[in-house]
Structure formats: structure tokens, C-alpha cells
Amino acid sequence: MSNPEVVILGSGVMGLTVGRLLPGSVILEKSSTVGGYSRTLQRNNFYFDIGLHLLPRMDGEAKGFLESLLKGQLREIPVSDGFQSFLRDGRHWHEITKLSAAAAQVNPALSLGFTLSHLFRKMLPKNGRTFKDRSINHYGDLYYRFIARAIMQKSSGIPPDQLFTPPSMLPKEKPRSFPLRLARWAARSFKRPPRKNPTFYYPLPRFGSLVEKLAEGLNVRVSSEVTQIHLSGRRVVSIEVNRQTVPCKHLVCAFPLQDFIHLLGPSRAIQKRAETIRYGAMIYVVLFFSIPYAMRTLVAQSFGSEIFATVFEPKRLAEGMAPPGETSVCFEIRCLPEDPVWRNSDADLVKRILEDFRRYYEVPEPFDKVVFRLPRTAPIYDSDLEENLQALEDHASSFANIHFPTVRYGLVGPNTNNSVGEALRIARRIQSMDSLDLGGQPHRLSEDAKIQMGKSGA
Image 1 (cartoon, rainbow, N blue to C red):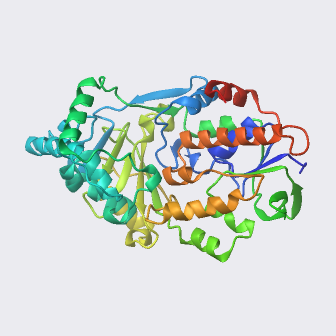
Image 2: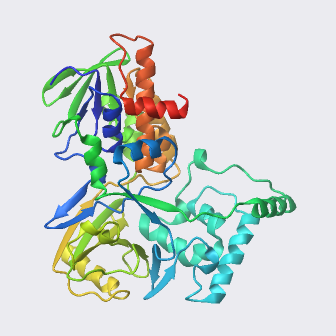
Image 3: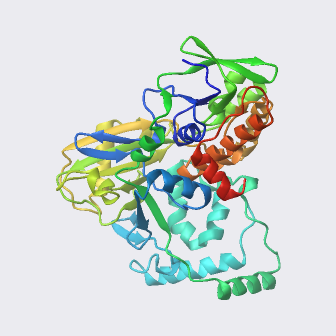
């Protein structure tokens, strides 16, 4: 391996984006594949993503970067009354942009109750940090009771009143006076412009094409795990990878900091904070059917049975995801590694999933199936998560030339927009440090990075 100026650890969307922005970088990936969870897998003539991947809230720098990269290969998917259904007791509860219609086809009186409780909490919100409090404030008490509570409980394995919102992500405190709240709410309601139907985006021909385009022409080394970091004072001078010492000027950690901190020789207290961060798990099941389509909507969430699952049909994202006349259906089952559902055999799991699915849709026996388990998907938002992440960031920040995602990235999760935004921030920081002539020639940004920084006024 040559002596690169920038070494990037991790070949997910963030790591690949930094690599595109900083030509000459080397990307090290400890697994044998590139892309992390953003890959699209193939089985025979079927394609499916590792979970439901969409690009929401495409705006700012991330939008400009992704649009220039994909060159129009983005399919717009407007959110409508057919986009998502909550399935319960064999019935559809359509979730659309207006809560007043959320349960109308099931129970008009309940629909009216949803609306009234929603308006009530807009005027008199609860003061609290738990997910229960935030859900009630956002949707109303009745919606929480009938829908949100079950979804939160079964998707995380933790009661919603034990899940917390980090203080840095809490909304600004609203005036406590009820008349003042009412007046402000009424004023906003009259001034607010008509609400646009939200739009999601999906890269064509499949989500994994985003990873493929990011990786084009980059120096990515798979099966390359860093086992040691050599320091001089508070700077990294080289790393050990595959029994080889590689000097580097900048080291980018493009994955969660808690998975990297042990290489920096932390104190026992810091290491313990990393070890106490809890993670949710996911069981991913894909069933293959000899029918053109299986579902009436792209996404559904079933929470009326013991198993909670987010269900989607890849063929509704892009026709090429399945052969003509056939389709696949993907089931994301969120749980904890200690949950009973995690210990179920694959055969029993598929049987129970199929029984649940047939309560809503008429499908034949699947002719094939795939089951795999991801024991560590996302951190659990307990009351200590932000404090733990902040302590890890403070420790890593003491090293001058190590670059990593911020605490907020760790809290909001590694969606594509956040990953691209963090990559742009890290590229700016490296360019800024090099412009101060910290040793060697200044590192040159790619044209993509210069364009994005020009748009942002950086």
C-alpha cells in the first residue's frame, strides 16, 4: 500500500463520499464487501435492499451532491394514502398526511377523536423527554394509545416511557400560558401555506447503485481491518493494517465512534461508556412469490400480532427488482438480541410471518426465502446515550488529525442525507487544516467538494 495523506476507515456512504471529495485517499473496509447496510443484495434474478432505504428530506448540500452523482437517476415517490398502512386485526389503518382521515375507514368516531386529541396537545403539550411524551405532543393521546405505543414498544423492545429524546434534540420550550399558546397556534394556522405532499426519492435502478457510483474509481481495500494506531503526542502518525504499517496525515473514522474508541487507548471510564451503549437488533426475512404483486401499498407495518414487522415490496420501488410475473416481500423485524423472537428458528419465524401476512393479503406459498439476522443495527435512546457519546467525542477530539462523525449524527442515525452532510463537513475540516500548512502540501479537494462548498458559502 502506498503512503496516502488521508486514510478512511469504513466504506459506507460516509466513507465513500469522503473518498470522492478527497482524491488520493485510501478507504479501508474490514469486511469483504463495500457499502455496509446500503448495499443491494441479489438472489437469482431478484434484488432487495438491506432494509427499506429511501432518501427523505432531499435538500441543501446533500441534495446537490447526490443529484450531481446520480445524474437524474432518482425516482420520486410521493407520500399518499397508498404509501403506508398500519395493519391491525386484519384491517388497514391508512396513515396519510391528515390525521383526521387516519382511521376514517375503520371508525369515523375514532378519526374525530384523533383530530381533537391532536389539536388539544398542540395547545397544551406535555413537558417531558420520553418518546411517549413527544409522540403524544406530535400526534395526540388517542393516536399514541391506539397506534404509536404498540409500534414503539414492539419495534424497540422497550416501553416508550423508558426511551428518551436527547436534550440537544428537544424542541424549543413553548410559552406556558394557555391563552398565549392558543393565540400563537391560531396565528400559525391562518398564515401557514398549504402543506405540500412529502416526497421520497429512490436511486435507480436500485439503492445499491448509489454505493456503486460512489465507489467508482476510488482506492477501496476490503478485508482490511485496522488493529493498531501509532501516536506521536496527540497526533496519529501511522496505523497497522494487515500486519503492515501505513503512515497517514489524516485519519477519518467513517463509522460510529464507539466502535473505534478502543484503538485510541482510552481510560477505563471512557471504554466503559462505549461498552454500555445498547443496540437494537433486526431479523430480515425475504419471501419470493410467483405472482406479479403481493401488496396494495409500498410499505405496511403490522403490529396486531406477537411479531412486529415493517413490510415492503421492492418491486414497487423499481420494476427491475423482480422478474416479470414474480415478486418479493421483505419483512424487517426490530427487536433486542435477548427477545424471544430473536431465538426463534428460521422455519418457525417464516411460518408465523406468513400466517400474519395472509391476514391482510392473499398470497401463495413462497417458492424461496432468505433469513438473516443483524445483531447491532442502531443505538437505543436511553437516558444516557447522548452523555456517553459526548464523552467519546471529547476523548477523540483531543487528537488533532482524527476526524469522525459528530454526536448528533450518532443520535439521529446514519441515513444517507446525514452521512453525506458529515462527509462534506469532514472534507472541509481537512482542507482547512491543510490550508494552515500543518505539514506537507495542502490537500486538494475534488471538483465535487468545491462545488458543494461554493453553494454553502464555505
